[in-house]
Image 1 (cartoon, rainbow, N blue to C red):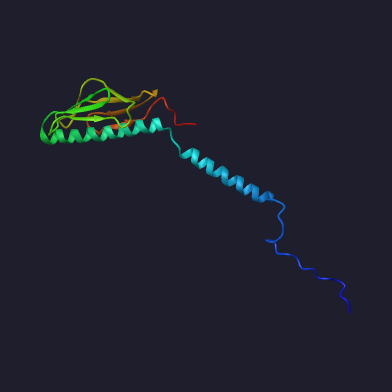
Image 2: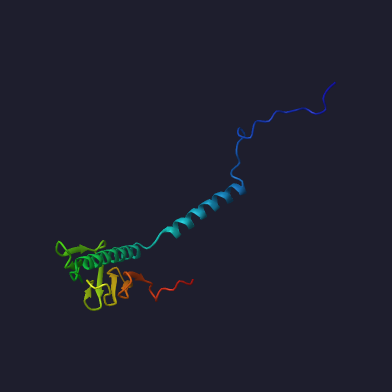
Length: 160
């Protein structure tokens, strides 16, 4: 009896020569690359904006600390901007000179900024700018009662 159908052994799939990638494999690779690129581009922020916001947050924290020390000691404290940073006069232990985290940062205030010793101070705004991007500013404000906080920029729209 001779079999009408002969069984021919085939090599396993991993041992056969490959003719290239399938369309599905290529689509998966392209989708992974697109997702990774989108995630990286969305997570990156402009370094100038970040540096300016960091300086503003740091300044706000230092002003609130000086305000609390002024109230606790009963001594008036004054903040003054300098070309390379700022000075806080009147603190216990002497004046504190601070430099900006980014050397291109500059600040200006409307009038003198007294931080106490009264619990309510005059409303004031400090405007921080950067030499590299003069059109971008960050405003640190207080109404005299609340702590200093970054005020949203009205020229930047949050709508797409």
